[in-house]
Amino acid sequence: MPFTSLQQKIQHLLWETELGQLPKWQSFNIRLLRIFQAVIKDLSEGLLTLRAMSLVYTTLLSIIPVLAVCFFILKGFGMHNQMEPVLLQALAPLGDQGETITKQIIAFVDQIDVGLLGAMGIVFLFYTVISLIHKIERAFNHTWHITEYRSITQRISDYLSVIMIGPILIFTALAFTAAITSSSIISKLSSVKLFAFIFETTGNLLPYLLVIIAFTAVYLLVPNTRVKFRSALLGATIAGVLWQTTGWLFASFIASSGNYAAVYSSFAILIIFMVWLYLSWLILLIGAAITYYHQHPDKMLTAQNNLILSARMKEKIALLTMYHIGKNFHENLEPWSASDLSDVLNIPNECLSSILHTLESDRIITRHQDRDITYLPALSLENISINRILEAIRTQDESSRLNLDSINSVNIVDKTADKLNRINTDATASVTLRDLITNNEADT
Image (tube, rainbow, N blue to C red; front, side, top):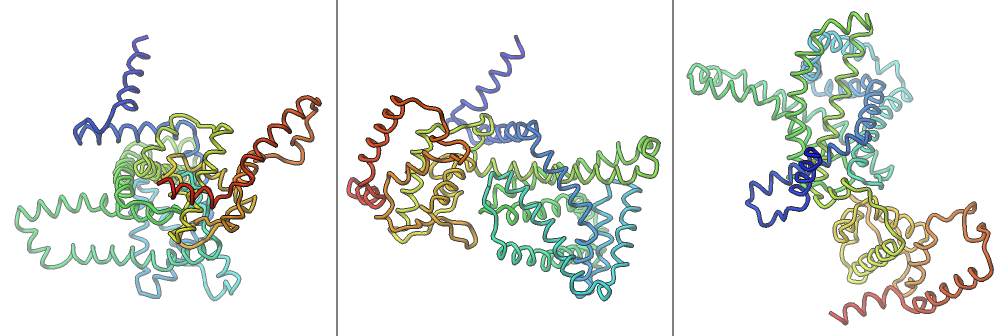
């Protein structure tokens, strides 16, 4: 088939081309195409769309409390009047319906009386906002294949910082931009054709720039891992342009259509609002996926193939994981995070996370919570035998309902299995993690 042949050629060009031998611009383009194909595969599997739909539901429940908290914070700085124009700008793709929704939301927020809420009401208000941010973090962590979440104390402190400082910074930047554009100096310069062209072009690009800055901040701060600025900027740039372009298309072809009103009657405005929320969250998650694959290009191969670890792979990864954790502990170096271990071992996070979970459950390693979750040996290195590490991995996922004793076996098989276990135990029981580290240092 000609189409199949063409598809195979494209796959060969994308995934089997040695990028180091190509010019930089060709190498960049192929990397970008690889990222796009990996993101498209994620979209086709439905998880990104499912997360986006979940965030739409959460947003509908939380939008009034979130804006209420922002309103109360901004009111203390005399900036609360800036909320309606910003919200109107965000809902501009909805056309006339966006203006109606904005007025209704602001009316709801205005009617909230803090004095009548009481202490429990205020606590519930902040809890709703924190729950929304936590849901967003979970969606981003899933996109980044992160299974470890922030601790409760760190979650509360980080989220409250975002809630308290975020609105102030955003609206201060917007007010500053508005002040500059309306200044008398800018007005005088606008009379000159060259400056008028520059200001007009800047005004057209400014919405894109503000969205890209906001998306970059989200990609840097929300995932529970260290995100490189260059990767976040690339993802934010693509997502920002896509968001602005989708908004224009949405306003042109969907929000202006009268078919929704004919079918859904008075519910049309809510349907259009939910569709726009869904598209916005989906675009934000697509940008997060682009950021992830740009920072971890080796993980794109995992996106093309669902990898399952064999038994010997699990054992080797467990030994290497314990070697690196033990070595840094032995040499008083910084402890390893899951993301760093994933990079140094060149394996996906989701493959490593099950190994880390097993070692932690067997009390061979313990986690340390600071800015990132890192791992340390739970015992002294000389008390961690190689046999114990291997036994933890070999018995992984066994349960009381399904284990060796629950299987109907025969005598000869039991004897053979016991003999193999004795051989493995005799070979590894006397070798400790400390021996592994010091012997390797002696060899090098």
